[in-house]
Length: 157
Image: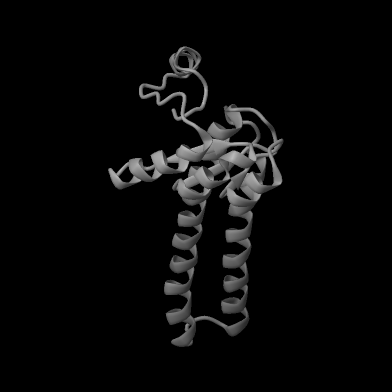
């Protein structure tokens, strides 16, 4: 955890959240430098911020997350803008991103499976053209329906 708060407050919050490493009392202009240093050490860094002074650090991080109530500059700079000013929303966003990647992989698998089976069968004339067209339409519909399942995900945390 990288914060401008004093060390005692930062450590108390880190203990509550289960965070092991705490870097406290960092001035806003030094946050981006510290993130750059961590990235050069091979760390993957996510930065959560809401103010104008967080914008350089949000841009420097691998993933910048702006809280919805934050400044326009922070929201514009970040990779992700959360609609609610709740740290649980960060956890929800990470879990939703994992579900989205899994959904994309599923959709690619099924699209390739349909096409790798359907195209040769249709090209060989073993399938009526209208049936091949229907199968291709079903492929697209199944991909869309699978993706729409993500809309049912509410608050994960």
